[in-house]
Image (tube, rainbow, N blue to C red; front, side, top):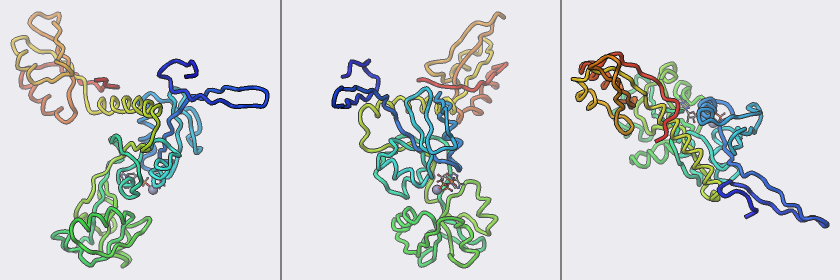
Length: 311
Ligand code: ATP
Ligand code: ZN
């Protein structure tokens, strides 16, 4: 095919002209839609940077190009991203799961991205009692998520009056527009300031990578390269590299506490009777294991962040 190196995603286009035959080559690029500005923008750009992808121009424009990866970026409103990906205007997108579920477009979620974490919750006035979602039967609920809320209430056998509002949902009970709201929450401080309290969570959400359902094989291959980098960055964020000194007579106990990627590394120290032990720990087990290591006689414990983790 065009005599080009195998495995490189080139698109070969033959252009016919009355007197000549031009053959032009374009490098096939993956197009990625991210939020133009808002809560997901900075984390989306940071993830790309940590994946070693340089965005060379135009963050203030609608489009930008990666200098060192076949990737083009489109900056859009987050609500529009699923539609653009379904329509193949963008091949892939970074967007909140909440938006994906609300818009119900034909797109495929491929990878949770670990940022934009929030929950979609039902909230009621501070003084109102709440024993369960059945308490909302026949009530007016304001939300920007009528589809997710409607599906949830249906699954609970509750019938309520859903008022769709595009923004500032939290003020609806205060101005008499609704009895309750269903909105995104992270700390709960906005609810508190508006005299509301969280009653129950109906969805846990984070940003996800979505893809068009019919990507050609060349673009799937580019996506696999990007996903490989994203997974390595995510793994590194969740792990720490640990170095410690262990007395040889406690080595067995100390090693039994450490997982490592294959197994811990053990090197002799210059001081007789001591070893240096290196390992990788998961963030979730971290403090637990450090305490046990200290109790087992480990000394001089150093903990270092990992930039990338290829497994
Ligand atoms: P746009 O102008 O792109 O439409 P927006 O105002 O709809 O932006 P943001 O408030 O920037 O959207 O939120 C974007 C996404 O960030 C949400 O859809 C959600 O996935 C995530 N998010 C994380 N925490 C929160 C939060 N506390 N409140 C709202 N969204 C949050
Ligand atoms: Zn939006």
